[in-house]
Image 1 (cartoon, helix red, strand yellow):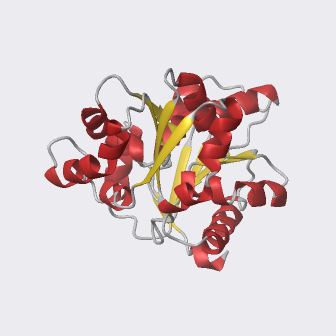
Image 2 (cartoon, rainbow, N blue to C red):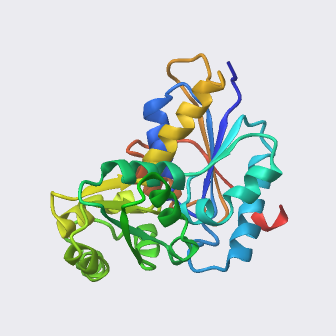
Length: 271
């Protein structure tokens, strides 16, 4: 048993989709969330910059006495997970390997679509992990650089002509290729599930990287006998690196419950 909180971070609000799944699976766990809203998105940055930012994010979270850190960010998971795991004495867990494994198991025709940030796609991490699980799989990857800023701006609902037009353009090649499984390789993308499903059709299985990462984290903590003994009542603390004013409203949409706690602002460059 371990009553210490779990740390979770992302470049912005997308990682809250992983927090939502963690709450469903582990309702008694305390969680400290940091969203680097002042530097979102990470997806177009160099690997060196992503690693620098991720180290600062972890350094801030480590000011709390945590039992584990979940990288609820596909970009950081593909680019910096190995570095962060080697540098920290507590478990640092990502979302990419669990999502890749789920996709490899899901496909029936061997054609798997992948959408993510430019950095995630450029890394090739999903392709390597999927083929390690399913060597016959064919992975078709598409970067979707406008998805994160549009989601952060609240443009993610069916009927919004902007996000629907962008989604149709990004997803058309994957639909034409006949993929039967699509990895949502960024934790912002679950907010676009209705839009993406409308584009791809009901026959395509959507793999939520944040949810798969949360399931894997819960399983790892359980295997290490590191869960809190509470069955409910977990407490949540939220921090951002930019203005807090809009966080509670948008975070409530990502999480599915009202954020009533005070939100802290962090000078992340100081870490």
